Amino acid sequence: MLSGLKLEQKGNKLTVTGTDLDLTIQLSIEVGGDRDGGVVLPARLSADIVRSLGQGKVEVAVEGEEVSISNGRSNFVVRPLNFEDYPKLASPAASSVTLPATQFGDALRQVVRAASTDEARPILTGVMMTAEGDGLRMVATDSYRLAVRDLVGQQVLSADQKVLVPGRALTELQRLVSGGDDVTMRLGDRDATFEVGSTRLTTRLIEGEFPNYRQLIPASHPNSLTVEREPLLEAIRRVKILAKDATPVRLQMGGDTLRLTAITQDVGNATEELDAEFKGSELTVAFNPDYLAAGVEACNGTSITLFTLDALKPAVVRGVGHDDYLYLLMPVRVP
Image 1 (cartoon, rainbow, N blue to C red):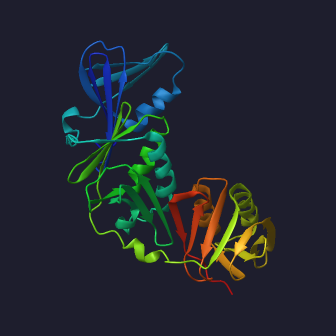
Image 2 (tube, rainbow, N blue to C red):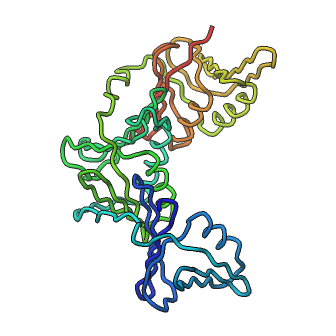
Image 3 (cartoon, rainbow, N blue to C red):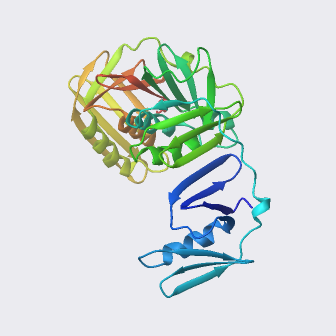
């Protein structure tokens, strides 16, 4: 049943539901309804059929144990799944808060990327939402990097309240928020519901204690490098061509330049220099190029600042003038 899509029609409103029990997405659209009813269709097969059809309206008709999907001279007949066996879904919590789409969508873009995708470590696959000061804080980590974003003025949770939302669900929500509609959030005891326009996304919350991320953030950084964001991203992408088999990219910082180097034995090396502003002691530190690029790309603004302590301690990336976001990155030990 979980491989099916539930279609329910009332008047001219069609509601389509898909679920795997952990994540549920429900969409309502206006249709030309003939009579009320419901059916469960094989999801992948039905989607392939509809995508293959030409322009114009698509007609779905249920007749006994068969469902016809037609368009013009094209007609497909499929056998539905048992409507009564489809999982009964709980209603969302009554109380709700509304988040501005632009701000919340930007926070999702910045934070979700740092959540782990390793299901063997379920706690790290989530994004922690917690009350912080006069707003909402979102935190994610995969143990190699950490992303923290503050949404000032968004009173979503009560004091000391924390919830752990699966990163997979928030990745889907990120696609929905890009449409520009505000987000209505409803928190239950074990699930969270997000409503965007005519779409509702419900996900089970992750149970467990999120790591103490605060102890990972260094209290001070004696070294700081400020460089333009886009030129740095382009330089990382170029030198990464020679960073084969998880080879790190070295950042040599000092004076008014930044040198990026990638060296792969028996393949070759790449070097690029950028204008930069550096304060502190000359230092060379190496990072996973994909993780570094992800953090730089997530920052807002035209320039970023990389704060470092030494070659082995966590570094912090921030957008200049944008103190509401922090991306912490573990360096890679190199000879």
